[in-house]
Length: 257
Image 1: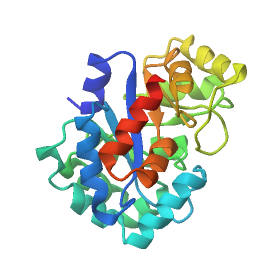
Image 2 (image 1 turned 180 degrees about the vertical axis):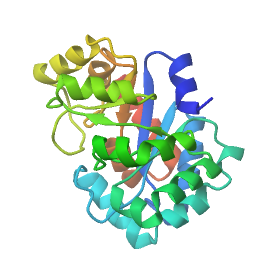
Image 3 (image 1 turned 60 degrees about the vertical axis):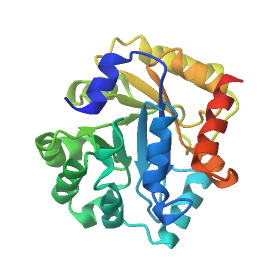
Image 4 (image 1 turned 90 degrees about the vertical axis):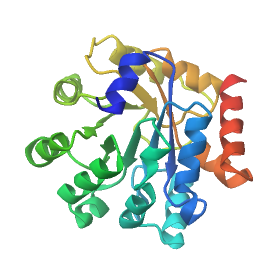
């Protein structure tokens, strides 16, 4: 069974997924960070593929991507780093990246390498859903790779239900139409959006991302979903703390205070 599917079947709420950029802070930190995240009890990990024009990302993740590219990170190098990851890490791993570097690699080749190294799914924010259905879904399904689609407060109910019908992992609920970045709280409008989607009776679970940084935002996100995704806050901590383990400890402390 796909590890993402297994996670959501065995844990119904309070799921914590953490995003970090491959090759940041240092080129060869990817595997170390993955191992530390699992050791600290994180449920799932999204590994970002650095790209020169990350349009959905705020300044923190943009800076991390720029540094990772300067460090020499590439998709080829990332797969090389992950080639033995399943000997040590068992939690679900998702690759998150933009379409351009994946298409340069070749979508079928990308899926094949994901399957070979034990990646469980992918998030491609700039891949239109119609294009996914027409040109990519069959290939991803062949390699048992879960495609995770994003929705925002502006996504129509019709589109949400279409995504729910044609995907089979979880739906990534973007907290706002803005870029990524830590927030101190979610206003009533955002919480109404979380509640509205939760009340639709979708078959897929949802995780909330963009802006989760502390206890208040984590609790607001998880009240109407299966869990939350944290990215920018963790990237900031990777920069400020001496070790990956220290950054994760600080992150988890912040979710409790």
